[in-house]
Length: 361
Ligand SMILES: *[C@@H]1O[C@H](CO)[C@@H](O)[C@H](O)[C@H]1NC(C)=O
Ligand SMILES: *[C@@H]1O[C@H](CO)[C@@H](O)[C@H](O)[C@H]1NC(C)=O
Ligand SMILES: *[C@@H]1O[C@H](CO)[C@@H](O)[C@H](O)[C@H]1NC(C)=O
Ligand SMILES: *[C@@H]1O[C@H](CO)[C@@H](O)[C@H](O)[C@H]1NC(C)=O
Ligand SMILES: *[C@@H]1O[C@H](CO)[C@@H](O)[C@H](O)[C@H]1NC(C)=O
Ligand SMILES: *[C@@H]1O[C@H](CO)[C@@H](O)[C@H](O)[C@H]1NC(C)=O
Image (cartoon, rainbow, N blue to C red):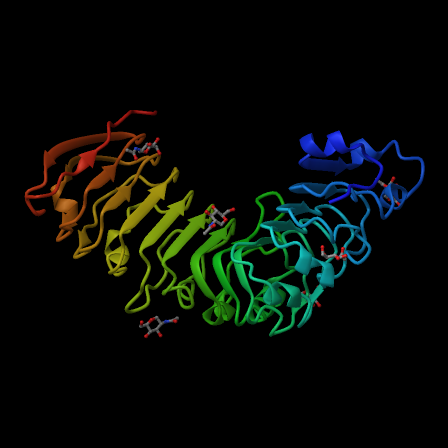
């Protein structure tokens, strides 16, 4: 293919990444800079894989001269003033795109058809980042029939009612991993209220991540209502003090609570997740007691309780009843644990690996 444009051909061989951030284009004499770069700006870059256009005052996608970048895998449009998520037709050309970030833009309304081009082409694994926008409404149907690898919505909504309604607009979405929540330094929603995630009953996903909610004191009992059949759930940096009600016949296979506020290993409630294979409760500085018993978790293979403040003597046989497949127990980095090594209640075949215990305090 003949190469045109302002850069000599040899540049193309080495230049697979192009990063334009404000500090680098601050020297532009004309403003806005992208106009200065002109519509021919990326013409020769037919092998470009990553394009970073952060803080470049872009207000609209329609004029970006990138429709010929067939090899582009990552497009980072963070910290601009893009108001519409309407993906222009040229996105159908970007068949290699895997990561598309609109972090910190001005997207307020997402309408049916905005993401239409993503439905047209076979895109199996695109990550779409919409965090730090001020989304007021997602029109139901906007995500219907769309398959994404990952969708990230952190600090994207002004308040509880806007978030709850907007999540209902995700109906029909299929996504491998959905990440919802806040940033710790940009928390707009103060607390988790009942029904916040009710819209997720209409979303098909493999993994759900809820991150950075401060206040969980009331109304946590609907937390699992619409995510009880997701195979993997990660709860990260939540001030969750108790495990919410576990739905009957839950399909959750992996559950992680990282930096939550449990004081005690909530083994009784967690034993209601009958399909559980991997359980991790880590980095919780309030977690010091392990008295409750895990019971009848026939698929449970891995428990990671590392980096808490657990303190007990006489582990671990009494804490696990009918957990015949438990193979790995990690108690590293806790306060004061003595392991008796007696696992008589468990099935004889098991090798439970208790990873070396280190005293941190
Ligand atoms: C973006 O716009 C602001 C305000 O109009 C201006 O001060 C700034 O220099 C512009 N930045 C770039 C990279 O063009
Ligand atoms: C999309 O790709 C086709 C085929 O390479 C090309 O003719 C067309 O100009 C591209 N579209 C845009 C908007 O660049
Ligand atoms: C999808 O993308 C994610 C993140 O980029 C990656 O970890 C994962 O392996 C990919 N999955 C497939 C099936 O390509
Ligand atoms: C939530 O935010 C929306 C949009 O910013 C606003 O119209 C509404 O009044 C707010 N509701 C509450 C309860 O604060
Ligand atoms: C989860 O699956 C069970 C049975 O497979 C079904 O009865 C239940 O309605 C499902 N729950 C949700 C929230 O989809
Ligand atoms: C146990 O947990 C510690 C701390 O999280 C981690 O570094 C280590 O890799 C884990 N060990 C195993 C065998 O998983």
